[in-house]
Length: 188
Image (cartoon, rainbow, N blue to C red; front, side, top):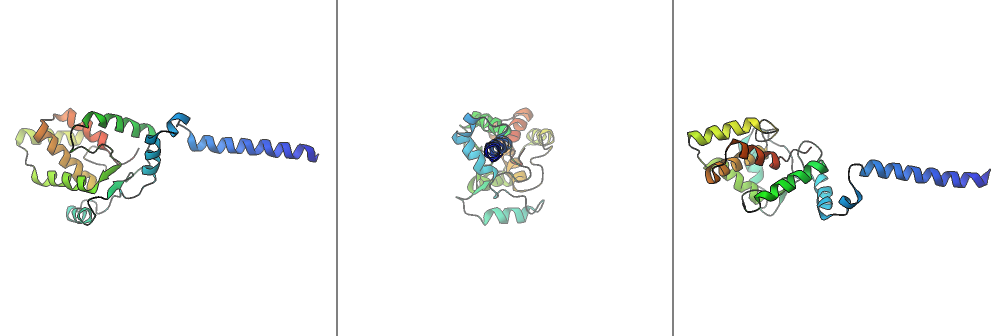
């Protein structure tokens, strides 16, 4: 009987390890897991410096952002867990904008200095009537039906980025919506 117990325990151990590995790694191929992008995704998906705070209180949000060093980063997602496939789509899509320094290349890893810049766009760019129509329509057509899922720092930053792109690059509604959806840092 003892000679059957050890092989049985070994087999059970192998099955348990395989099951746990499958659950932890499901949806992520072995080759994807060995890439720098997946390593960055893993780090960012456990980061917590991107938080929704002071919702709708613009002054408190700005004070919070201003109190952070410019070389710090808002990292991770604020509301929902990050999704590897969605993250890959966002990063791939944002590569199309790599020649525009105002556009963060990773919505889950945005420098405080870049957030401050986008908040400045929100406050300092005045749109004409036609541009304002584009701005207003675009906000209602994003995945979040606004500049972010809640009125946090990202809401003001994304609104500022939209103003910047409308004013300086003559972006239309569709172009603004596409960009803001790629910049969505809420997770998912």
